[in-house]
Amino acid sequence: MRNKKKIILFAVSAILLQLLFFSSSEAKVYIDITSPSWIEIPISISGTGNEEVKTVEDVVRNDLYLTGVFADVAPEAGGAEMAVEISLEGTESLKAGAVVRDLISGSVVMDKKYSATKNSIRALGHSIANDVFKIITDRDGCFRTKFTYIVDSGGEKELHIMDWDGYNSSIIESKGLPLVHNWSDDGNYIFYSSERNRKWRILRIDIKGGVREQVFTSDGINLIGDIYGNLVAFSSSKEGSPEIYTMQTDGSGLTKITSSAGIDISPVFSPNGSKIAFVSDRSGSPQIYTMDADGSNIRRLTFEGSYNQSPAWSLDGKWIAFVSRIDGKNQIVVIKSDGTGARQLTFEGNNENPTFSPNGLFIAFDSDRGKGRGIYVMRVNGEGQKRITSDKVRALIPKWSPYLY
Amino acid sequence: MKKILILLLMVFVIGCAQKHVRDAYYKDAARCKADLYGGDGTCEEAVITVKDASAKDKETKEDKKGDKDERQIIADESVISEEGIKDIDLTNAEVRKEIDLIFKDVLFDYDKYDLRDEARAQLDAVAAWLMKNRKTNLIIEGHSDDRGTNEYNLALGEKRAKAAGDYLLLRGVSAARMNLLTYGEEKPACMDQSEDCWQRNRRAHFVVTE
Image 1 (cartoon, rainbow over the protein chains, first blue to last red):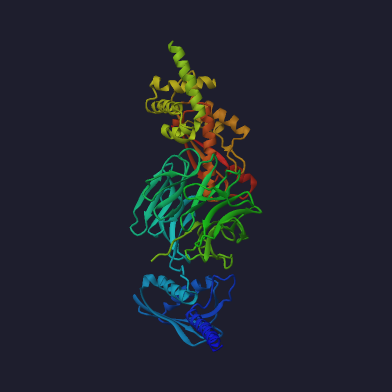
Image 2 (cartoon, rainbow over the protein chains, first blue to last red; image 1 turned 120 degrees about the horizontal axis):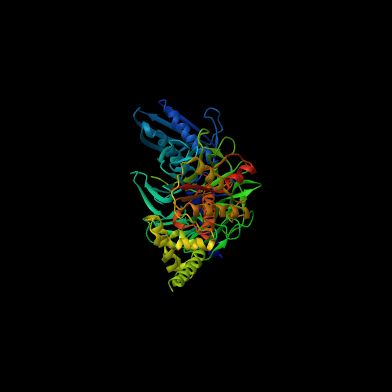
C-alpha cells in the first residue's frame, strides 16, 4: 500500500515537473502562428537617437504589421503587451540597438546591437524585424528576402529586383523581352526566359557578378519553370508542342518528361523535389496536374472551372496556389496538394502569378484592381492584401526569393 | 524512266511532307525518328529530303536542282508558278497594298488554336501568293488576348502560329521560308477589355520579309 502511494506521488510530481518544464521552455513563443486562429499581440514600436531612426522604425513597423501577428499600439497610448525600442547613432556608419520588452512580465526578451551604413538603413530595419519576429513567434521572418518581377513600360519589358516591401527596385535585364523567371535555391542566380532575335531563350544571371549566360534555346518557346538544387524544370516546344523538360542548371542532361498533343507548361517542384505540378490542356482546357519528377503518376488536381493556371507550391508541401478564372476574372485559389479543400483568396480585379514567401506565411501576386497592374502581398489565408509597387509602374509576375544572407 | 523516278520521289516527298509537318520546322530528322512518329526510317529520310531542298532553296535560289522538290509539291497543290522565281520589291506601294490585302490576321476562338473555316480560305490565298513570290519569307507571330496568364498565353500564341504554319506547309510553302514566333499577350493589337478587342488580339499575324 505504501509503495502504491509512493508511485502515485512520483507520477504526480513527474507530471508537475513536466508541466513546469514545458511552460518554461515554451514561454518564449508568444504566439503560435501555425494555429488556425490567433489573437494579435498589441505591440508598440519606438525609436530614439538621430533622425534616421524614423526610417528604421517605419521599416520594422511595416514588416511586423503585414504579418497580421501584431496590433499597432502607439507607445503613449498604453495597452501594449510587447514593446520594441530601437536606438540609432551615427551618420555614415550607423550603430543601432533593438530591445524587446515583455510588458506583462516586465522582462527584456531581446537586446541586440547592429551596425550598418547609411545606404543599408532599410536592410537594418528588416534585420531588426526578423529578430523581433523570431523571438516572438519562433519562426524565421522573410523581411530580408526580395522579389524579381517584370516592369512593363508600354510593350517593353524589364526584369527588376526589389526588397520584399517594394523598396530598392533596380533593373537586372532590359534587353529582349524578359518574361517568366525564377530563383535558384541558393539565391545566387535568376533564371529567366526572354525573346531575343526572334528566339525564346532561357538565360541565367549571377546576381552578384551580373554575368549573363544562355542556358538553353531552340525553335518555339522555352519557358523557365522552377529550379530544385541543380535540376531545372521548364517547358519547351522544341519538338512542336509545349512539353515539360528537365535539365541541369548548366543546360546538360536534357530530359523530356511529358508528352501530349496539347499544351504542357509552368512546372513547379514540390518542396522536397519529388513531384512537379504543371498546367496542361490535355482535358480540353487548362488545368493543374501533378506528377512524379520523372513524369510518371500524372494526376489531375483541379476540376472546378475551365481555366486553371500558374501553380505555386507552399513551403510545407501541403498547398498549391493557382490562378482560376471565376465569374470572368482571374483569382488566386489555394487547394490542398491532394486536390481537396479549395479556397478562393482574392475577389477584386484580375489576380495572377501567385508565389509563396520562403517562410510560408505570405503569397505575393499581381493584380489589376484599382490603378493598373501591380504587385500585392497577402497572408496565406487571404488577409492583409497590400500593394507594394507604385501606382506609376505597371508591375507583374513576382517571384519570391529564397532566404538571402 | 527518269520521269517515273521523279514522279515516285514526288509522291514520296509529298506524303512525308504532310505526314511530318511538325518535324519539318524543326529540321532534326533524328528527333522525329526518336519519339513522335514511332521511329520508321522513312520519316528520317523524308525530313532530310525536305530539309535539303529548303536549305538549297535558301542558299542558291538560282539552283534549279535545289528547287525541284518544292516545285513538285506545288504541282500537287495546282498552284504552278509559270514565271518561276522573280524579284519583288516589298517597299513598292502596289506590292504593299497587295500584301496588306492578302496577309490579314488569322483569328482564333477563345482558348483555342484550331483553324476556323474562314482561316483556311485566308491561308489558301496566303499560300498562293507565297508560291508566286518565291523570293519572300514569312514570319508568323502568334498572339492571344490578355485573359489568361502571361505564360499560358505564350503557349497559346505558339500553338496558333503553328496552326497557321502547318496549314501553309501542307499547301506547299517550304518550312525554310517560315519563322514562327509567339508573343502571347505581350504585343496586343488593342488594349480594351471588350469582346471585340479580345477577338482582334487572338490572332496569327504575318510579316512578309525578303
